[in-house]
Figure 1 (cartoon, rainbow, N blue to C red):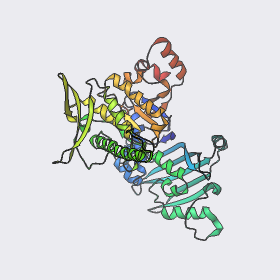
Figure 2: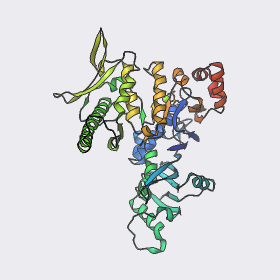
Figure 3: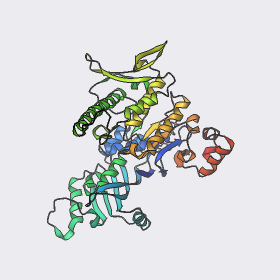
Figure 4: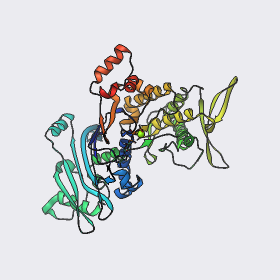
Length: 486
Ligand SMILES: Nc1ncnc2c1ncn2[C@@H]1O[C@H](COP(=O)(O)OP(=O)(O)OP(=O)(O)O)[C@@H](O)[C@H]1O
Ligand SMILES: [Mg+2]
């Protein structure tokens, strides 16, 4: 999991550090303090992993939108970022059991705007990783700043092009003993030399260096997953209400598009689980002569559809339908059907009507109801929902409270968490959302003469005590400005 970011030169983020914690992280602060810029940075970084850095900058509006502006038309020429995190890896061992190992990474880069050639490129990238079989050993390595691998890439500007030099500053070859790269036979510089040559030949310097060295260890692939997961969701009800083609890829998009396709995938997943169940129970009946039709979920409880970045399991549709009950009009019985003429997906639910219930299509529901459906679907199906901006718009205060509860349930349950990023970032101005938040979940964002600064409230325990003793809520503290000084 990504644990901390240091950013310098990206929009209003100048020398700005952000510490992320597992679970909920809520960015609060005045308009224009830089919350969206922080969110945008995470998206920027994710995008950087699948297209050249210069293209990424263009997609975000060009140099003038991405690099920091100062005073009268001045623009910064470099963005520096450092991302630190870590994780665990579970691998099967010789005796058939599984062993957990730990790792930490530190990836830093600078993106430089070179006026002379009107181009953006990586100025320098460093990637360091340490691995260990125990937590204790890992923290002692941290204390002595020991790394198992330390790679760097540095650009030097020639006449009208950029040259890149790769170096391995450190390598504990013992910990990378399963590397399989063709050995050119140059024994003099050994494995290090081979890796440097591999980087020189295969790394496109417009991309993060991690992509070219992922073959070195699974931990590096996990680091890439961490850093490229950035996804922002800002649901617009009328977009979430749209009918979608049955062939559309599932996954809730940035603006709430993809809801129908995702719900379709959820329902299809249910159907395929049912078939597997039937097959398995008929097998069981056959072998033991057992009668009865007890559903058996063993062995089919998890499915992660990586292709679409979708997380589906046996509970997904139950969770989504249960969340619908929180809507005041008692929405129920979600159904997704394909219109045979148009090939469009029809999502419908039932709502109370007169003495009975009536089936209504998604587009006739209220904005808030559809937004709620889209949000919970995103929470339950996305492996990498990292950021939800201003979730409160359209949502009743009680739903805002319920929303935090659902996230906590997902993050408290290691089973639910499988294959997902370990944290979520929210931005909000909602007093009622904050009333249900814990002071330790808050990150206060302020704008000091154009520079965004972030910090965790210093006196979290004191705030919690005050809330407990006086009944004054966190949201009121935010609104009255106390939180920002706490
Ligand atoms: N390239 C840039 N260089 C420096 N500052 C920038 C740049 N682009 C935007 N800004 C500044 O960033 C600030 C906007 O920050 P942002 O949109 O992140 O605020 P916010 O905290 O999300 O506010 P809100 O609560 O209104 O959504 C503005 O003050 C704007 O001037
Ligand atoms: Mg904003």
